[in-house]
Image 1: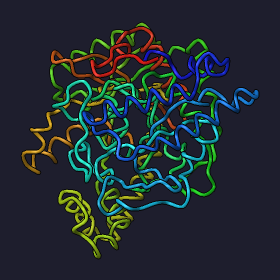
Image 2: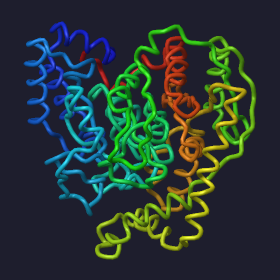
Image 3: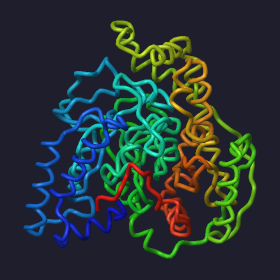
Length: 463
């Protein structure tokens, strides 16, 4: 699947490509590959074909809505869809059918996107492996014996396997960027408040972000353009101007000052991750004004995340604890021990941390780190015992978690492969509202390398 959304959008606009045919190909790939990947929970074939047919009619009559019109885009099964079940990969919500669309779903529909189904995830987004799901584990398309990351595992695995041209995931501690890195795709977490989370089942209101997973950086810009913007119905949404992200990629990028936070982010890396990240920095040096090492205080979000997760689930847990997977229930119940004083103090500290991080960007424009310190573990390794699962998930999220606490935008792009053929990701972090800057640098790096052109054997091109 080599064509970008922008390229396909123009072909659809000029009617050399049919949205109906694209959607049929997408549904055929789901039928072919989902038994291997377990990436989709619910497939909405009839609705998707109807949306594609409507798109074709509108475009034929001269009403082209933009580059997403007629393009298949998947949805993490945490986003409410009117009349279509939204399960959060849990038995608790296996029959839950929302009455209204999440705001991001509404915006995608307004952009003319075709929505083929709801994608599997780590139950209630409370984990980084998706080994824990009522609907079973998601498999990595590069090697089915390995995890696809989490919690947006089905979304990343689908995009990597060429099922659709993008997906919308959520990210509370790394749940877009980590699976994107492990599956060899692009994953973008916007600034806190940039994209509405209204109608998205929460893990932690203070730390949740919604964003795209795509094959290329330009595709991420297209999807972000469609879903970004103020939503008065979301108390966490911020009324800040939205840049033309797609146009920004068509401009000559301004050379940026790159900060490399080696302490913590580069500590104890797997040797192959370390080699790939350092090679990426040599490429970055040719694209940047300067690269300098920096040191940062590293924040934690455990108290805020745990307390807010428990607050959402407390009533459900008290009534039907047996409907949760055991590890999810344990994580949720850990929040019950947090006092109101501890939560308030931690929440105030987080606001101070988000204010303090602004000062870092007086001397640099962006930061660059490995997205994940280790390659994707095997399913067998994580399924053996809960203690190992927790330890590995904490490691997988080590480099992404602080960015959520800071509320900064960050993107993961492919930067190499292990000797076993598993993807490696590079994380670019920008200042608040700096999505255009990280997209520009990510795009320049992508164009200077060829990692994004590789595809897993499972994903032979269909367009």
